[in-house]
Amino acid sequence: MKTGRNDACPCGSRKKYKKCCGPSDQEAVAPLAPAELNRLAVLLQSNRHADLEARARELLEQHPKSGMVTKVLALALSSQGKPALPYFVRAAELLPDDAEAHGNLGNAYRSLGQIDEAIRAHRRALDIDPQYAKSHNDLGSALQDCGCFEEAAASFRRAVALKADFALAYFNLSNLLALENQIDEAEVNCRRALLHDPGLTVSIVQLAELQATRGDFAAAENLLKHAISIESDMPEAWAGLARFRKMTESDAVWLGEARRIAGTALPPRREIPLRFALGKYFDDVGDYAEAFANYRRANELSRAIGPAYDAIKHRRAIDGILVAYDKKWLTCARLDSHLSPRPVLVVGMPRSGTTLVEQILASHSRVHGAGEIPFWFTAVPRYETARVTGRGGRDSLEGLASAYTAELSRCAPQATWVVDKMPANFLYLGLIHAALPDARIIHLKRNPLDTCLSAYFQQLGPGHAYANDLGDLGHYYKEYLRVMDHWRRTLPPGVMLEVAYEDLVGDPERWSREMLKFIELPWDPACLEFHRSTRPVATFSKWQARQKIAQTSVARWRRYEHFLGPLRECLAALPR
Image 1 (tube, one colour):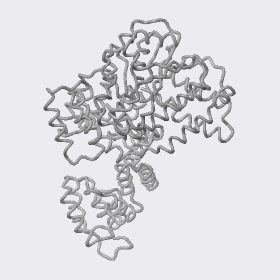
Image 2: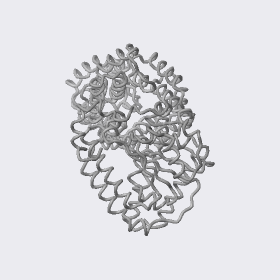
Image 3: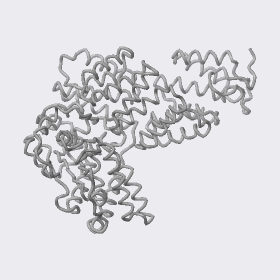
Image 4: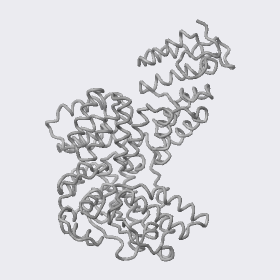
């Protein structure tokens, strides 16, 4: 059947034949026949990727400027885990007005950790077709990777507004909301995803995570097993089974399947969580060499696809904090404030015990644990911009205080104190105290080697690029010490309480009493029963936070001392 220039293209795209697979103005050869396009479409839809690659290569010999064939070849290569970026780039060049081609390019860049390029490609796709729901969803994922959570959420919401049954976009929105500790709304969107696609295994795994956040680990395990019944080799589901309990040598079936799946040609993003899970298994059973080998593999993959840690840039950023937020500035800038509810900021390095402190405090009847509130990550850059333009005065600080207090009130309108346990708020303590002088700060300290090793053993994400390399971890830790030394000299007495993790787990009642005294609350015995709490815990420590205090993590680094050369060298001058 003859295909006219204004007919729909047989390849299945939304474009007309002329605009999609018809002869381009530059081609001096005959266009692809509709039957050939249909054949390619059948191979693509049936996941016969090797056959699709072979046929696409043959066709490119005859049609070297065919954007459609180049696009199909790129997809075939990518689906087999083969290098495909040059073909995605070429397809976008040959199809400058094809939103799908630019969207595919954006996803290819993202898979390689080139997030800025991914965002540009997705924005180009949306310039071509603003109603293309898939590109809104894909743009949201790239924005989330670079920490632009507000913009990412807007992209996901736009995607589902355009396509009400877009299950993957509901899942992505759920995942983002969970990261922001909005557990109830995250679950609503996760269930919406499953309503539209009951077999969407990533949403089943996400729902398992949310159940674990609520402390229902049995429900989480059942959901993970359900996901595996649908997708037997799903790395994320197998990885989840290891995270929510202590593994033993009786988990031989899990180990065999996890090793088998990890040994297949998985994309790095899918191999990473399984490698971290294998590391945990071997750590749990005491095979520390195998544990470290898997953790190292997980971190090497994370480095390969994630943003690089720029030690020089980070050091300069710390230099800027120390100069801008000194004692003279703080004395002049500090507001007089009497806030309700009052914030308790629990800060420190990741994996230093901040979740444990939040659980203890939140077990008090007059305290609410809000988890990790990302407010200051976006508020501080806005304030810095205002300072540069001469608008960073009292009005700007008052605006920060009001906005943050409103966020706390939204979390817990009846609480006397609200705990914000975002560890990295240690970077912003000068500005936070200036805006919120009534706030109290609890700084968790932990042995440097234990802290860094625990961070290395967790999939902390693209915002923690330093955690994927032992040398980078050592550098980041020393910069953290430098900025905390500055706050000790700068903040007024009585604003910050410092608690050593080792002391807390060694004498939990004494230090729980000290922390309550610090925030002017009476003793509540429930604080020693924190592991019985039913409040959501959305951090990596969601399982550990519901266990009784133990000292098994103290001096944990000694089990791995033979592997810690770069870290020990970097931290050699620090006191133990």
